[in-house]
Length: 257
Image (cartoon, rainbow, N blue to C red):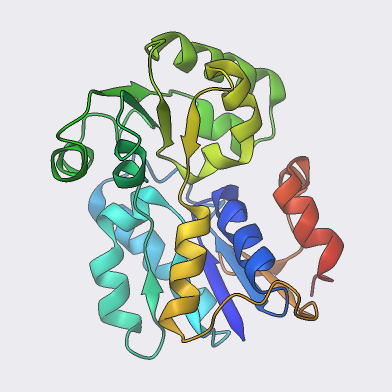
């Protein structure tokens, strides 16, 4: 079994680690685009073009499924990715966990990039899944970039700024960017231990397995291959990935090729 994941940067690590926990026997292909990131400020057409290139690099390794572990790419490029790759390769997009967070009864805060905050896409999700609860959209300028570069001081500053914009009565915070899941511990400390965090990594990992008819097997023997592609080039995990537990999990358990 081989699962591919794509993102502009290292935000895909959270979903990759989730796949790893569910199916230790799965080989992984991690395809990202350091040459073209960040994708957030790009036009939808540019995002689609970059995402297709990253997906094609992953598809060349013949995965059983592809996880689009990026909110921006899922918003703008998912139809194009599915049109090109399916049905040969099932494509699973990432949607902010607004629906399960709203089930907590609210109030809910959604942390997202400035480009996503207030966007028609996010407002549509709020309308469809959180219409009955109070929702605060919290822009997090600089947080994804700080996570990408493993800049601890910049992460701390961006998290503190977002926490200050988050109402004190919220019961749930939606992590609306895959990069944010890598610093969930810092976010939890900033908003308080009684606030539930909702990411997407576990859900998209489980959905990818369902799409290929595979269930969880956490006791399976470890897989043997990790393929890392940086803008199409074969590589090892980038140094900044090893700043996070998810990256160290992949590096420690699966030898890189």
